[in-house]
Image 1: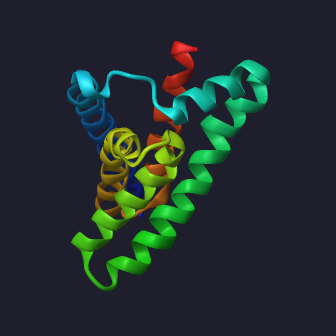
Image 2: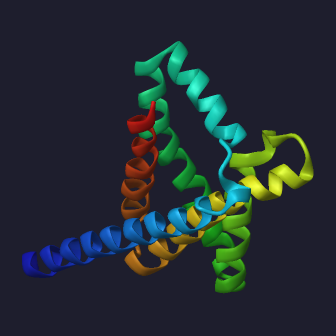
Length: 153
C-alpha cells in the first residue's frame, strides 16, 4: 500500500514539473509576441496591491488565491462540465479562468489580448487536474506560478 502511494506521489510530482515547464514555454511563446508584451491590467493591479501591503499580498496571491481559484475552477466548474463533455470542460473552464483574470483591461480587444496567457495557464491547470486526478497538483502549480511574479516585484 505504501509503495502505491509513494508511486502516486512521484507520478504527481512528475506531472507538476512537466506542466510547470509547459506553462513556462507557453508563456515565453505568447509573451515574446509584440502584441502581448505589455503589462496586463491584472498585473498592474497586483503590483499596486504588493506595493501597498507586501506581506498580505504575498499570502493572498501565492497561497489563498490559488487555493480558492482551483476549488472554484477545477473542482467546481471543470468537474461539473466534465460530466457533459471533457473537451468542453477544458475550453470553458480555461476561458472563464482567463476572463476572470483579464476583465479589467478596458476594451474588448485588450481583454481578449490579455486573456490569452491566462487561457494557456487555465488549460494547463485543467489538463493537470485531468491527468493527476487530484486538486493538490493544480494548487501547487498555481502557487508556484503566482509566486514567480514576486521575483519581478
